[in-house]
Each structure stands twice: as structure tokens, then as C-alpha cells.
Length: 396
Image 1 (cartoon, rainbow, N blue to C red):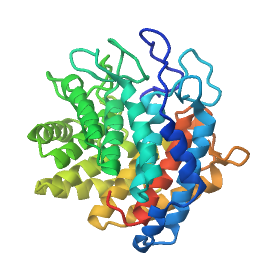
Image 2: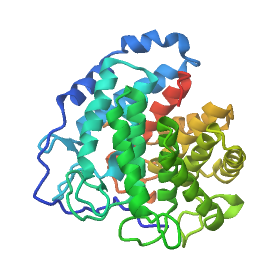
Image 3: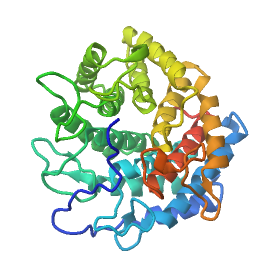
Image 4: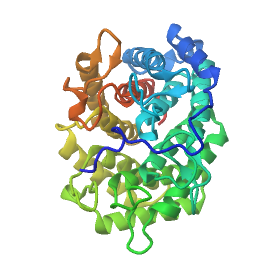
């Protein structure tokens, strides 16, 4: 199992500490969305499929407001990686904050409003600060905000960040975020792909081929093809998946986590199910069968074992909820709802209102994370937010 990247690791900033400030719109929007049910949400009531939709939405709204209060670094104008972070470079890495990006996107998708949209816009503009135009030979997103130069960058980070931008585009309609997602994929294709032997590297140091990069990159490319129609994306996704089907399969024809660790993991398989399903929707019939095969294998392998950690399991549930909404396969909404119930019962720290334990109540340190990380809380909020999308009958 690869070492967790975000536990104590920081990359050096070129040119000093971060000095940019997050826009005031995010602070105002979070406070507004938590203080009352918006008129847009009330107007959507006729489309809500179950009475649970407002509950999930309120949990997500209230949670992001608490996260803002707990992790926002007023001096640096962004979020810290963990509570009381006093390291030299305390701000959140991409891997540490990606769930908050997705949670804000999903809240706006579930209940469109001016306040929710402003929160997405403010965060997405801050997320652009991770872009390092000085990375060579192709620029991409560095793991730490305002990193500049030839720093070590992760290809799965670029995939997760690109997916956050894709969902921001879907939530707001702002094509700026679609271009941000395209920059992430361009970096993955240009620097992540091993042109000699195939496969996607984990990071720019090329330590091993990674299922995380395969999953995030393939899904990002499929979504970009769906939204732009550019053959560039379809060709690359087919290249990624053809190599993986020939060289990267493990038990039940699931995908490996690395080229040295054949253990299948939910957060690799879920995005790949959805990547195949998107290719199916574009007319690739073989992808339809592969999506079903992979979904069935994932259910068999993970349905009773889904406690890897919120930061991982939410990625799996997000994209399996999307697959369910597109195919009518209803196995995952019930599983996601059970995981959300477990989180409310077991992971909430009552005195702070933060979700800092694993969903089974065990310490998060047993799940590849450090205590008191923003990522742990935000991943649970993201699950609530995507359940709000599903419960409201919104398209994924």
C-alpha cells in the first residue's frame, strides 16, 4: 500500500510564504447558506424524491460553515491542513482539501442558489492558485498553493483537482473551470504516461504506476470528452484503459492499486466504473459491458468491507452514486445512506461539531490519516452533499 502523501509532507514554496487572500464571497456565502434554507432550495421541493434530501443538505451546509471556522487560516487567507497546524507551510495540500471542493460543488448542484454558487466560485478561484505554470515540460497543479518551479507533483492530485473543477463547471456553468480541468488533464497525459512501457506514474519522481492516477485521469478525460467532444480526450482515455485491461488487472478483473500491490481498492474502482459508463454513453458498447462487470465485481468485493477511511470511501460512493443515477442500479444509494448514518453516529466529535473519526468510530489514524485533518471532516461532508444531490433527483 503506498505511503499516505499528506501526512506531514510539505513541498517548499518558491519565493516565500503564501500571501494571497481568499475572496470574501466564500465567507459570506458559507454563512448565508447555513443560516437559512435558500429560496432556490424551497423551489426545488417538488423535485425532491425523499424527505431525507433537506437533512443531507443541512448537514452539508452546516458542516462547511464549521469547517470554515475550524480550519480557515485568517493570516494566510486559505485553509490549514489540520487543526492548529503550526508547520512552516501549514496550508492544505490538494489531497487534503479536495473533498471540500467537491462538497461545495455538490451543495450547489443539490440546491442552486446565489449563495451556494458564490461559495463555489470563491473556492474555485482559490483552487487555481495551485497551478504551477513553471512545471516543465508541461505545467500542472502543484500539491501546495503558490508552489512555483520544478516541484514534485502528483498525477492523481491533478485528476482529483480536475474533477473538482469539472463539478464546479457543472454547478456554475462557468467555462473558466472547464479550462482549469483541461489543464489538469494535459499535465497527466504529457507527464504522467510512461511512453516506453505504458501506465500512469504516481508522481513526477516516477516511483511506480498508480491505480489512483489511472482512476482519476481516466474519469477526468472521459468527462472532458463528454463535455467538449474533443477526440484528444477520448483517445487518451482509451489508451489508459486498454493498457490497464492488459497489464493492471487483479482479482475479479478489478484494477490494482499499484504495479507492485495488486490489492483492489474502492476509490480506484469507483471512478473507473463511471469512466467506462461515460464511454458507454458516448456509444462504446464494449464499455457498457465493462462498466457493469466492474460494478458487479466492486459490489462483491467491497459491499461488506467499505471502511478504508472517509477520504477514500467518499470518492468511491460519489462515483457509484453517479453510476446508479445513470443506470438505475440501486445498490449504492442504500450503501451510501448507511455510511452516512454510521458517520453521524460514530465520527462526530460533539463538542466541536466536526467529523474527525472514521465512520466506524475508530481513530482516523488507523486509516492512513493524521488526527484533526480537514480532509477527514470534509470527506464526510462531501458524502452528505452527494446524497443530497441523489435525494433531490439531480443529474450527476
